[in-house]
Image: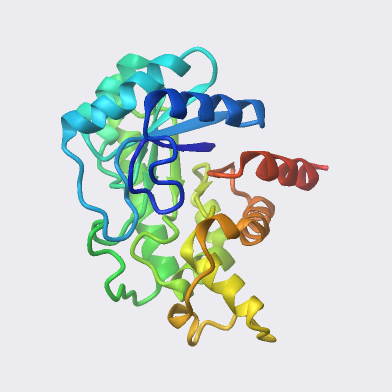
Length: 266
């Protein structure tokens, strides 16, 4: 799943593909690099991001979806019902829902649906997130929402543990380590680790010469490497996820992720 953020403020590539022509050209490059799905989003959900008005999000997303329809499978990354409906009318066939609330819409439209776990909402989700047991809580949340979607009639259901959405570095690494628990729920798993801040902190620890950069006691205190300098961490964790049963990888660096997937498959 190649990422196309039609936003001015996304954490990794905000503003790069904000104009429709730039977004469309970028998406076509990702398809040429091997993306099977293009995920078009018109609202940043990075930590601290403010909501985007519905009409503005539709204005950003629909021209890109329309231009790509018929060339590749298109997912719309949204939390809003009317945005999802507009994108599906334009040609999207998958709703990538970070709020895990739009299953009735997906059922009504007859499209696929991704339920992602997010603790809180983007503006506040990274303010001291806490869990008794992050793996148990995320697994239970995803199972309940996927079952509700199934009862509602959604035929294609995916689940996503939501790395970085209301989770600190320790939570993210615990979820990654126990990804087989999420896979065992029985729904195909989407993993979105590409360029995430936790990877930037792990790479910063490595750059600083730590013997064990995976130690998390002070990982959240480290200044992360920049988002466009996190390829090694992205590929390493994507390969780990593939080996543990992830069915789809959401990636900014599609060519490298596809090559890694081909090596894993071989």
